Image (cartoon, rainbow, N blue to C red):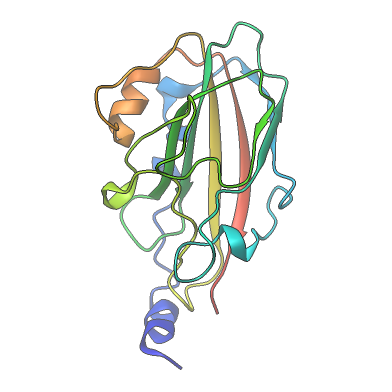
Length: 188
């Protein structure tokens, strides 16, 4: 057994928890819901290895599809967090905004840093910009990756890639609807 696996097993009971997910922030509550899905994995299912982080997989953001977004939405914002990380707060793997609500989806890899198009990226945990795939500690057990998408009535604008607190504050009390998808990933 490697040192990392031994440490992961030791830390198994330590989890950040769901209470600090963006979804749980009362300022991001919404009167309606919409469907968020991925053709790469089922809700609650295991994410493919190609979506896992660098050094483990190909670090490709999974394709996403959505339906039922309100017609008056100007844009969608997406936050991906891991509430099972052995840290005080969930790890934020992605902040993306400027997503076209009528597009109905994004292709695999569309949420990488340096991409082109209207989608803008914020800074996740450890100041990383763009999609950072699952890299749970080996032996720590399965982690959940919560894809939280928010429909907004106006476009967000930031002068530099925003962090989670900045994005949540900008979206506060303005969410029209929201959708959620959970993927899982585990390293033995």
